[in-house]
Image 1 (cartoon, rainbow, N blue to C red):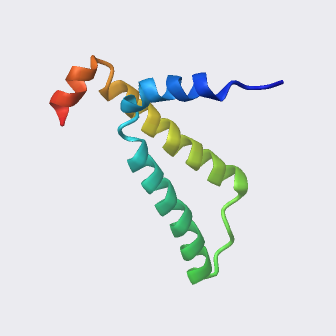
Image 2: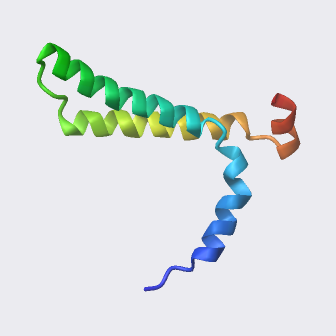
Length: 83
């Protein structure tokens, strides 16, 4: 099965302005990952279970996407007015 990449690219390019808070969510995700590794090694604690880490990572990314979609639910001109 072959996926047509060009239409997917243009579809994403048309809505990429809606994900304004995704960068902040990715920063928060990287901070969480670094902190959980650093703190567990520093204090000799057991590592977080993978299920918890995945759940937190999913929640952070989902929150970033949800907030982005909620804040940019108006027209593209409303987004420009917020900046």
